[in-house]
Image 1 (cartoon, rainbow, N blue to C red):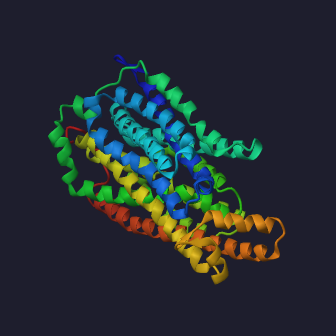
Image 2: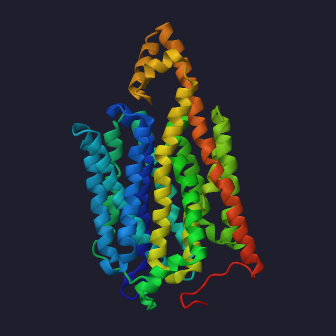
Image 3: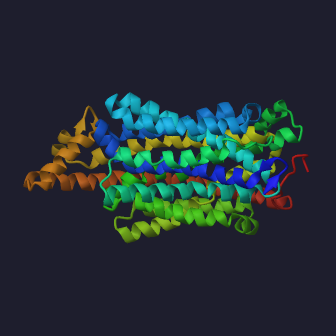
Length: 451
């Protein structure tokens, strides 16, 4: 569909592919995290720091460029994101030659590219489809789980069937980056809805002070931790709890999210967006608790199904609600919501890693603890040494590995159980908002003119 001098269909598809690129970076990093731990000999907490750098680049970028996408131009920013994705992946591949700090910085660059993509595509979608924001944002963000699936299956296939290194698997992220870059390089981009409607920058910024907006920002933090916190660790955690490559569970739950987001419009009309978020929070809490007590593949897939249903609509529906209820906040409120979510999820990464390590260490026997705990931190390298000796038939090492495996299962399960508290809180927050709107005639979309 071409409107004026703008090819909305092409811009929307390019936005979807840009989001696929960011999601592939997320899922492939989740799959290679244990290998990064072994390559750099870093603890679970330090692995969480790698996740933190990848995620913190997102809010840094989105807070800086998000409110100014109309000033800088959405096309220019999306081109910068494309270059950031390509260079960030290349530098990460080369980082073992330069050390752990190089890994952190290159991961940060990828995160900056991810944040720039999000800063552009959300107001772009809201601008192109002002009368169907929640649905179109859900369709756009269906390609987040779509990208997780593509990245997850690609890294799994490369690892299992051709024994590809983590560098090769990471390198495939460059392909979608090249595709969306080529699609947008010569296209024209429209003004944001806020700018086209004549709403001033100062009025846009003042919208953040509205109590309803502040409540939604708080909810965004908790929904983001619930959705993205476990996703960062699912590969590592479920490998320890179930013994199957955890990336397959991420692919499975992402498949559920992909399908559900494509039909978000009719579902949101049945429950209302706020009611839908309340239902999702309840399912997410149940799913996370079930994941913490699932130690077989069948039980884990059942728990993952419930969790996948729960987290499906969180991110795009939160964006849709703030854009529909507070449209004069424009690109700034969308940027704040995205940044708040990623900051919260980023902080959750090392925190979950710390929970993982502390609960693992707690379950170790004194003998094994002396072998795998260095300076108070769990050492993957020492654990690998025990596993190698056990594989060679050393009976003492086999006993030590059994203790270690059981401790890892306990530590992994506790990471999910702690996070399950947040969606329980969200059930009450979203439920209260649902009752508030119902008492006033129901949830309604507000036009940018205020009606």
